Image (cartoon, one colour):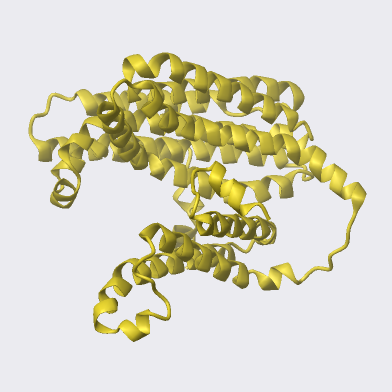
Length: 402
């Protein structure tokens, strides 16, 4: 209804179709959220993952069709492309259109879950949902600001347009290398939320949370160690060296810092269930708003002086503080005897191995690579010796039974 004034206010006058498509995509994502949550509740990870991958597949397919194939077919098959492609429209339009089509197909695949239930309005349930979820919405918005504020502030706070763009490009490119930790946390989150709520009324629920936290820390630190020790060899790979400008590699130093920050955020997420299970979600809003204010303050103070390094260290410090405060307050409202000593052992062991790998006086690239891989293997050996049996791994367990 207000597409024109909204587009004008956002600086997209004359491009109302962009805002309209974006609005449609977000609306379909919101509708998809509940059936996806239902699939997780029903322990149907294959259907959940297949529909998610369906979106990825078609999104890539539509982008390749509109951005690569159609421009080539305009000259050879103009009558065919005229039905689906307008060369006068920008690539951005077709990126939005590809997202719209693939999101629509994803929603279509969820129709069985959407229409399996009878819909009725329940005012009491609505009030309960809003009371529980509104603080979580604030938490989510503050969390997004925490994740993106640094990239917004860098161009605003660093003097000189070229220098600001340069630092933003280097920081953004290297931030993406930490996506492995983010993917691990996201995958863990998809599986862990229904697990936690499903276990809530069981007698062994707290022991299950303790074990989940232990294995999250073990595997999270393994990812940190692996990426942290091996990321420095990226410039030596010909494919990477030929396709990424050398100047970007100067920012590799932020990757371990960001990965550790994301690791602390993952622990914070694990700890967050005490206020979700006890209906004290307002604490989640307090943590996130406090973290958001601290992130903005520290970035504004230190980005002009230290550039993108201030962003990385700020994220590390803020997430560590949020994790620590959530742990101690959670122990008051919903005490769980996490294996803190075990977690500190793995953390210290990881830091020591990382320091040894980074400061080892080995000049040969191949020998240094072998040495660092050996350190990663040592970590894995200690994990299996101390906390993980081979029989705990489903694939190996099946082989042993056979």
